[in-house]
Length: 324
Image (cartoon, rainbow, N blue to C red; front, side, top):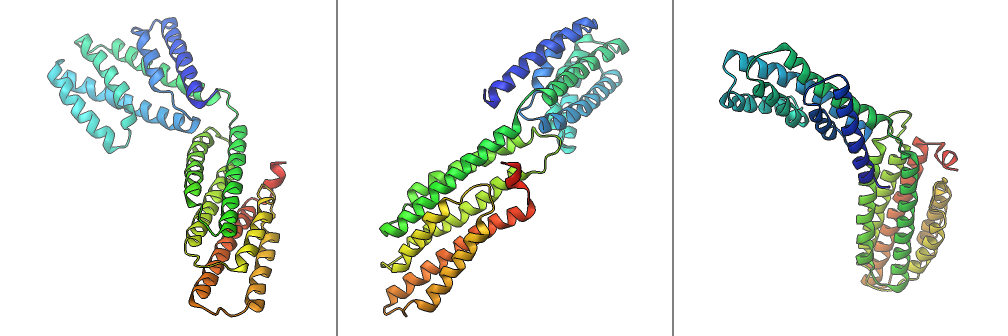
């Protein structure tokens, strides 16, 4: 099941459980507790905790402010409208606007009663307390395998990187740009990272961010590949070094994965660079000169590509073991 389906299930359970608890304790307007619980369900556990705190504080503020204004001025629609303006303004100022809608529902219950009654105030508070508590507990303890989802995302993004390197290899061999095929891969990577960030918020404990850091590293590498694709557009003529780089890329593809093979690949890349400098003939035309310069720039982008992976393993030295 996808995340939306899980959220719908949580909403149904939260609504039923909150209504049942409210009925059990003889809380009036028990169905309101169920509705408020639905509003308190979020996609991720981290968001749920933040929302619960903000809505609880905002609800307390609304009940106190509404009671005060109704008692001091009048129980009327005009005062409720004035309360709404003041309350919404304050909620935005203190950055608790997520609690505006449920808090206004509670204030309306006080208005409908028409006079101050401590019992009604306590009953109204009980509605939001039940709803928030049930929603929070359900969000936190609802079973989801976030680690498995994040691992799947890393595999997906590795496949994209391999596909993009393959396109770059073809570009150098065919002397043609495949940048149009590169753009969808870049957009897919962006989508994967966004989805993974949501999943990562479901890991409340022992989260060292290694999966997200891995995906961010791949995003940085994709930017290097993007610049390499753009450089291919500037190649004016064929050069034998382009085929050498293409051969290197074909070998590099097989090393894309969790293991730290970037250091060995970097040594090989630098050996190739040294060979180009020492054994290549001087360019005879301006076009050949510019083509060689572009090829060097592509190599520098690949060098940065590998350094991104090395830096990741320096931050997470046990990553490849943990993924075995």
